[in-house]
Length: 487
Image (cartoon, rainbow, N blue to C red):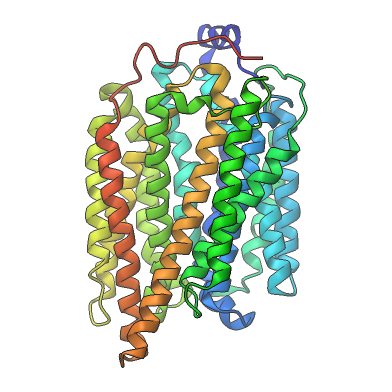
């Protein structure tokens, strides 16, 4: 799927409506696979009881999913340049369906976790495939509108995950979260393989397995160490050792890619970071996802453990926010095409900060209905931020770096989300334990921990606003130029 200047030019002068049709099946598939990224959040309280695991252990069903994506996504920059669109799509959906089946049949927590990891491996291919294809075939003047529709899959799916799981858990076993998704994913895969056409050209080459190993050794221990820092035993030597190993391996991975760039065969081409708009957008997206997933992991605990709502009720409570994000996605894209990114990014960033700050004020006594408008504000604000960031970041790259840019963006996004989840759970656990030891009852100790957890999100919201102020309104003429591909 290598993109060339000739391919890009031909596409822009061709039948755009026909070309954009390729995206429909990629968007549908991406929506269903990313939905599973957060579908477990609402089920964690039930799983802690049914599978006899702690909350910190159960949250790995979400963190491991995102972490696996972060480990696999760097490979996709290389993979997508060496297989056709249909081959990449078929491989992703086959792996995802296999993991989904294993999850549904899982007899133990360990098998369920293994199934989630397999699911995530398929999902990891779909995200960069969709973004790379979009950047290849969509003309620059249409990217905001099309990216707004793609936001439905990239952002709304994880936002709706808790609602979908809440509806299913109200009438059936948690296993049906997977049995319900399985036939839908198979149907999309079969129809998609019939309808999809190949985009771009393939290029032969070998994968650098040392880079693959370093990627896994870096991201895995890093997130594990973060989650263990707030465990029941506190910051143990195992947690600090894991963090040290993770940081060292990631540093080695970066140096390995810089070395391979001189020979033209990096697993993940880091020359994308030489483009300022892409780098700022990368950081902004990472911080925003840390805040988003961190708050999403806390809400089910607050709604269910504090206010006594069941899975369906808590899922319905956050549904309006997810729907608002989905409905606004296409409109945000149209606004971006007309006025650029800053009129969306700055108000959206302010909204994120305000919403997360309001969440830090939750109490045991306040009405549960106060969560609804704050969550809607958060989701609407995220919708205003995500579309411009994706469009500006990838649009600032030359075409031959689209696949590597998509992979870098997706990898850091997932690491950030996993780290955000782990950090918030760690803060929640540490603060709740401290308050309980100080004499607070269990419910008030838990809410105190949640307030601190939301406080982490509010601090991240400040960083989102600062980075948004640094983003341009449009991609400059110097950026995004069709530079010759590096071989």
